[in-house]
Each structure stands twice: as C-alpha cells, then as structure tokens.
Length: 308
Picture 1 (cartoon, one colour):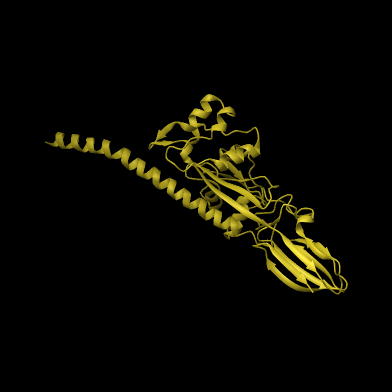
Picture 2: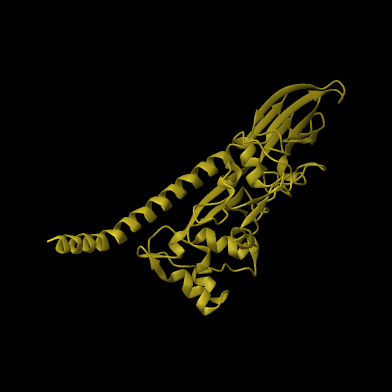
C-alpha cells in the first residue's frame, strides 16, 4: 500500500509541477509589467523637474537646452542589447537609471561604481529584471513633430536563449519594436526582422520555449509619448518688449513692442515643439533691466499669450 501511495504522489507531482511552474512564470511576467508601469510613471513625473543634471529625464539634444546642460544617457536603438545582456552596470550620473533612482530618493555611490546583477541593492533592482537582464529605456527620433517617443523594455527570458536584436538602423529597430504587438502568448517578431537577422535568429523569437509562450511574448514594452507643444506670443504693447523663457532656455523668444505674433516654432531648438513639462516664464518691460515677470507655468498644452 505504501508503494502505491508513493507512486500516486509521484504521479500527482509530475502532473502538478508543470502547472505550478507555468503559474509562477505568469506571475513573474505580471509582476514585471507592473514594474515597468511604475518606472514609466516615475519617468513621466520628471518632465517638469527643474534640475536637469539629476532629475529631469527629458534632457535631450535638439530640445532647446542651453550649453552646459548634460544630456540624459539613454539606450539607443542599435546598441541597447549590449547593455541588456551585460552582467554589470556602472553608475552613470546622467544615466536614466540614476535619475530615476534619485527621484525615488535612493542614496547613490560614487560615479562609475560598478554593480553586478547579483549585488542585491535598490539601484540594481531598478536596472535588472528577474532574469538578471537589464531593463532598457530607448530614446526615439528627436526630430518628430509634436512628440518625443521612448520605449521602456524588459526581456523576461534566460540569457542563454541568445535572442538577438537588429542593429543596422536605430530608427528602424525602434519603430519595429514600437509598432509590433508583443502582448499575446503567441506573439511573433516583426516581419521586417526576417531580413535583418539570420534565419535561426529570427526563428528563435517565434519559437515556443515554455508555458506555451513564444520568446517574442517575453519582450515586455511600455510605450511612452512625451508631447511637444507650441508657445505663441502676441505682443500688442506699444512700449514694452516681451521676453519668454522656454524651459531653461532664457529669452528664447524676444518680442519687440507691437511686433504682433511670435511663435516658438520659429526658434532654433523648438521647431518641432516645446517638450511637455518645460517651465515657461514671461517678462515684459521697456528694457531688459526694467522687465518684470507677468507669468510662470509648466507647459502641458499649446498656449497663446498676449501682452497688451
């Protein structure tokens, strides 16, 4: 009887083990989706931060920032996989991970400090997922009218599966990642990748490895769009000049008395729009020395300002 009981227990264990493993896998993926949503919310919460060196993530080239501001270090569409699979991360003061860590109030070590994926501190927890692969925040093209796109990405698969990303064209890779539906259990790699990867590399993405999931379905994405807006100033004053700061770009718009309509779209660095969250300051006066502030706000819509 004891042998029969042991056999039954063994049979049940054999049946239940895959079920429990699949449930655990699903739970880990759900947890990671939640982690990415939380990171996205933190990221979007930095748009109006005035500290561009340590907090504001959208410190981007071509966004009208004055000289001397260090741009945020983002992942790029043609090289992000190098970091995704890297077993260590070095603390970059301008890195997107570092800025999110500072937003969360984490104490940081010295710049350049290298952490292994197994270090187990809060900085590492931000950078690495359950499979000890690094999360990536890829910046999209910076010249798009009306928007700036980002992709927050996490590959929830063991590194030894050797999944390969295209590297030929950063914009093409970004757009194929953005446009594809990765959410379904049977998700497939973008069709365009078949010409950018070897046949074996492409097939690996579409292979069903475990839990009825393709490897492509293990690529989790958060698509982030930071809007760009236009600031229009109508100066109808016969005596006063108007000065407008667009974020940290002081006096980006200078409107002479009775000059009519002036638009940020005509200012270098802002032709595709002013990034959401930038602080706008308007001053007026007969001279720069005598000018006084009349408006200050954070930009979250197209605005038209009037000086009478």
